[in-house]
Picture 1 (cartoon, rainbow, N blue to C red):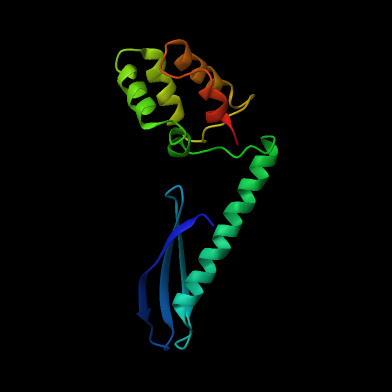
Picture 2: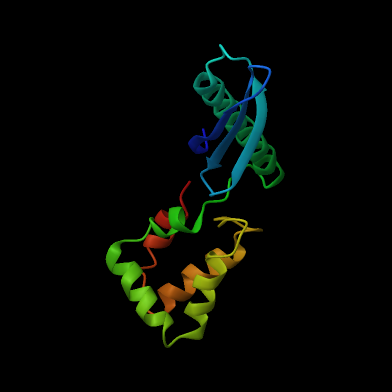
Length: 151
């Protein structure tokens, strides 16, 4: 489930005894979902919030599955997920090289753009080209490329 945080921002009693509730749910990408509703006084608003978080998460998962099907079942990774496939030494060397190599700087910039990182063509073509370039300049062993691109 991609909801990583759920909070009740306010629970204000109303004149008629109900409670005006403002929930906020944050997904794994940092996007927030605000829900405002009136609750009966005996309603467990924490249970409602948790059930709603689960439902929002299911909706996000369903949308991701539809998008994955449209992209030949490849779900894009976040920049962080992709960079975690590199060793610490590889990441440090790549970042240092980006200071003087505009191709590497452009590749890192490309990875940081919204929409995620795809690993296989056609959408992952630039990812594959970037990894091949890193290997060509000695920052990555060519044998590591299939490991990095693996599902």
